[in-house]
Length: 109
Image 1 (spheres, rainbow, N blue to C red):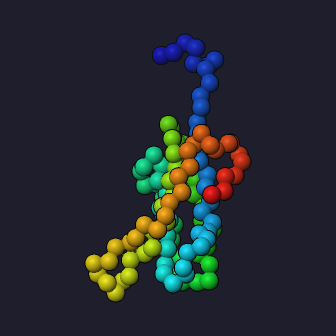
Image 2 (cartoon, rainbow, N blue to C red; image 1 turned 120 degrees about the vertical axis):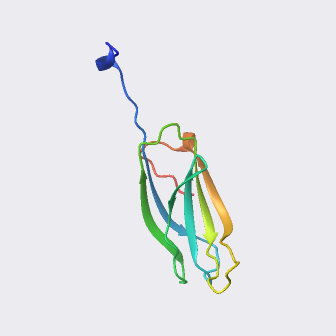
């Protein structure tokens, strides 16, 4: 029991994220993203069908997030369903350090 509990402050962090689109990739395949917080899988976008642009527009809200150091978004090309041994292929990633994020200001990468 802490007698000074009413005079202490508590910090609670949360992370809100939108995964919008991937630019500069061929649109012949299906792609999806995985969101990792501190190297732990925390979310996944849907696999988008073949189209002119690779656009998700998906919203994620993670909270509370204690001791978060980095956010990594991995872009994968979905495996071909006709080939049973084919696996999803990592195409690229974006890594954002949490100390580069300012509260309530969007970061575009």
